Image (cartoon, rainbow, N blue to C red):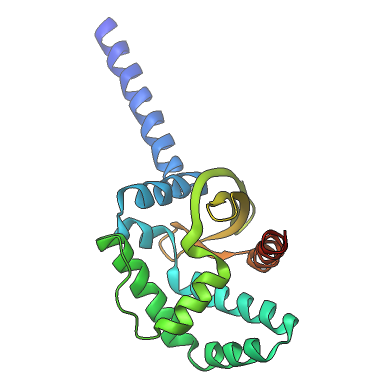
Amino acid sequence: MKKRWSIAIISIFIFISSGYYFYWINTPMYAAGEIQRAIQTNDYELLLKHVDLEKVYTAALDDSIEVLLSEDTPDNKAIINIIKQLKKPLVKELTKQTESYFYHNKKTNALFEQPINTLTSYIGLTTLSITNFISVEEQDEYAILTIKLHDKNLNHDFNWKVKMEKDVNGTWCVVRILNLKEYIIERKTLLIKEYTE
């Protein structure tokens, strides 16, 4: 009789544990941890499972265009026209560069090297490193992941609010940096301040 109770208790424990595990792997917090692990281990396939690079880069280009439009300079107009005309190829090239960085820890010769270098330096991607995943706020159909980044050139920390949605498989996936425009403006202000002092 004791043996049956022991087996029953162990079975219930295993059932509850496996239920919690399957719940846990379908949370945005789990996806955030997987993204962090992908970055730390250079696991590009794992990154792709939890970051929709095409959506992220497309939204980043759109946000960059909006910020450039607000500045209204002749150089910006030229950059905006290039970005608008070459948006799809630029997104493909940025994705290719991300893959190359993950596999080889370096950039490859880019097809659109000048626009990509201009864009990545404008956003500051080459000087940023992720220091922490601060929080995840789950809402109905999406979640907001707050990521702390450090800009080594400015010696300044920024927080990105990143939108996550479930893909067709129910996996939480990053689709957009919600406060990219505000980040670009804040970073540019800090750069101007640093160079004028």
